[in-house]
View 1 (cartoon, one colour):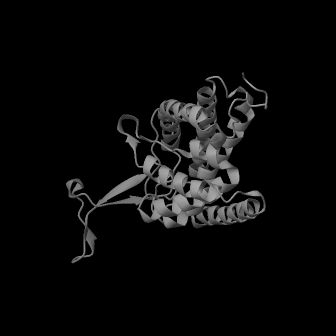
View 2 (view 1 turned 60 degrees about the vertical axis):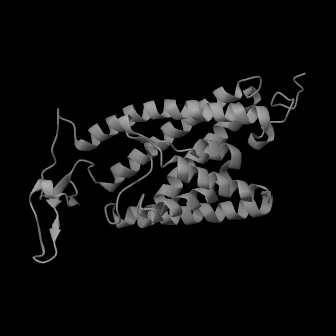
View 3 (view 1 turned 90 degrees about the vertical axis):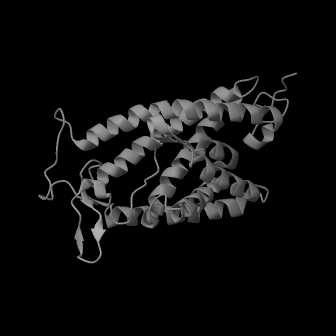
Length: 263
């Protein structure tokens, strides 16, 4: 839901460039942090969680058009700094698989990292309550908070781009021999995106609302359903890990999250 899956050149160059710059700064800081304080044991976990996110985000809940993320679970396990490196690796792989543009790797890295970092931070704040069966609830809450915030950031990026999600014109299939497009809508073909206010295609409104406003409403409504589903999945997974391998999510076996014994 928060992965920017548009082709190269759709977003303005300055926005994609800002995303690349922000991701470079983020990964540079993260690299220094993990070099200074990171554990070598987290390196295999980074690879595993990156691969898990690649697989999980390939699973779409078709009725609501929502792709699972797995980012919050990865953030809880890896923490924010290894999470930044994992986010970059994940988005590079996804871009080369055709899911997202090469020029938007930076923006997607920042948004994905935000999900991981916020999820990690919220869970760490709730860690004292993540015992005696409450780890699942804490994981679910962290997921809902993280994904809702990252969705708002995603919508802000789309708004800054100036591209109306519904402002597109079907061009038909391209005939190489004549250098023209087939206007028959049944021919399949390309989609040409136009910026609003360009004068070529007037910006349509429905019930007085712009396409972006409807897009934002739909994203938040369907996204909320997705957050609930993913919160449930992440919560159950975190609860399972808390029982069999609590140290993996920062919990000590036999303690209440504050170092006090539960027995």
